[in-house]
Amino acid sequence: MRGPLLYVRSRAVPVALAALAATTACAVWAAGRLDDWPDLYHRVVIVATAPLLASAVIGASLYSASAELDGTAVRPWWPRRLAQLAALTAVAAALLPLAVLGHPGPFGPGAVVRNTLGCTGVTAAAAVLLGARLSWLPASAYVFAVYLGFHGGRRPGATVWAWPMQPGAERGAWLTALAVFALGTAWYAVRGARPEGPRT
Image: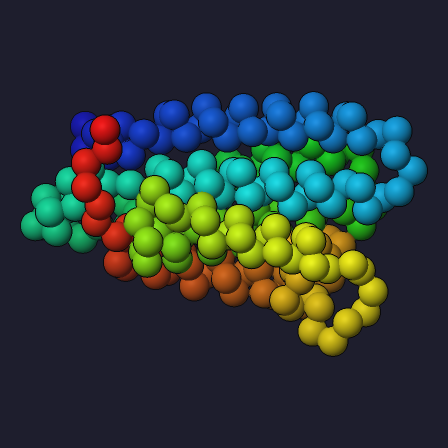
């Protein structure tokens, strides 16, 4: 177990798990403050931002302090990268729905899990392109742009391009989020995060 433990420590996975737990606690607290609102669409704030924060935590853990050494390793790195990303995503997808457990409506646990997968996929792809430090930027820009620009209604293709704001049962939103997650995860597992300078 020495190798896996060293890998987990080098990627700060325990810190990421603690940060995911703290994100969940904040989401549960914030969701409780919204219980007095009669409009279900106010819950979109939790459904959109909690997965976004969790994906930023996961993206930060994709940083490698020794990219040059990783490149000279005898064993392939993709199984470790895939296991790390899949495990952290699974933890986030299991914890975050606690914030909306008592609300099985359109913006309940299903929408939170879908957005967790989609945001993590975007973040994983961004880690390959921009590095782990900036991996949170594209997902944040996209989710906030959709949040500010989408006003509900049945617009053509809205379930695809506005997937973070869709109810949990929307098939098109699920297919989009799953595709983004699969592509981002596969790309990160194969390529790894873009090499960066040492953190100070």
